[in-house]
Amino acid sequence: MACFRVLNRQLQLQATPTQSLLQAAEAAGEPWRRFCGSSALCGTCAVIVVDGQPAPARPREAMFIEGWGKQEGFRLGCQLKLAEGDVTVINCSDYEFDPDAIAAAALAAKQQISKETT
Ligand code: FES
Image 1 (tube, rainbow, N blue to C red):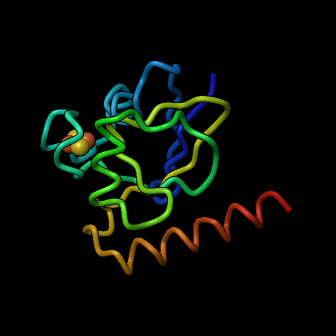
Image 2 (cartoon, rainbow, N blue to C red; image 1 turned 180 degrees about the vertical axis):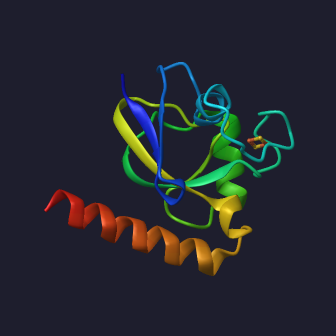
């Protein structure tokens, strides 16, 4: 079974293709901000995908990303699903949604992944 890897929490969450990252986190008892009840309205569940190919954003998530997803790889954890293989993310709320801190964490994560694969 493929999994979501939450790099900044050193966490791996197994998930089916129909489970969102948020659902996988909840199933594992992992706390995750989610103020709108997974309606793709609040953005508190946001992540940055730093590795892997998740399922594409559906229209509601795509609209949110268009308005708020200023950083490459921005996705909503409540909407993000696996497609082919594992997907690695960092959780934006762990950086209090500070764009500079998130960008630095995403860069560090990509560098870590690059080192792991070489
Ligand atoms: S929980 Fe609100 S957008 Fe995901």
